[in-house]
Length: 224
Image (cartoon, rainbow, N blue to C red; front, side, top):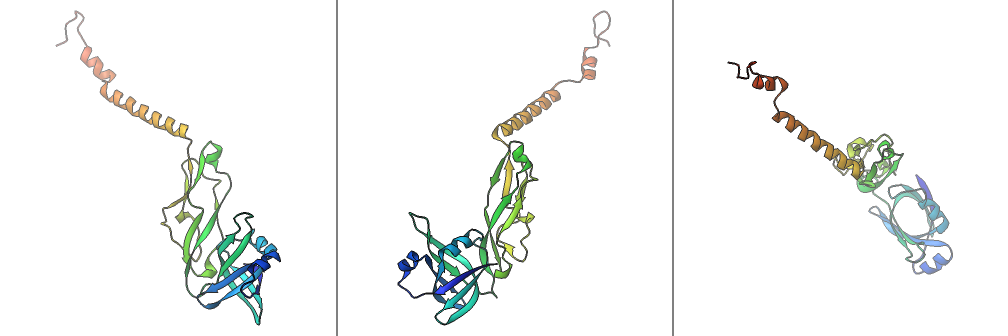
């Protein structure tokens, strides 16, 4: 679990806070009263570098008679369209006794054996929605693709979700190794040629049958 310090703030001072290196934020949830806070921009950037949207954060709130620590998730982030700097953050405190839905990011590691053979790694999902208690939701799902050959896949059923339930069908493909297009065409052509060869062989008489049909007597007449 990551940690972050926050200070209770009064409304109407957002721009001044940003000039001072503080980022305005709000904390809310079904079991707490909404609260306006501010967090240090450097601490926030350091936090963003090591957490995901499904990482539980220990938010330590102080000031204005408040001194408490609560578990939160990053619900939303607003960025400056020019500088791309964070300008506001929403923190969500869940009801720890009730399950919630959250998308867990998936990180794919390793180089697939099929890619080394010229294939293409086709990632279909970079996050998987899950349902469960906040304490059981993983911050990240890691998938090792190094053993995947051409046409191999990793499906939802292949992952360990611990105490949460994935909200995708078990057979849903997360990542697969596609064969290069040229190789796919060659495979199809070879298959078609093989089928044509079999059909031709079925239409031709065997050597024994041909011999029986063409057998003649020495004087050129057919043997009776």
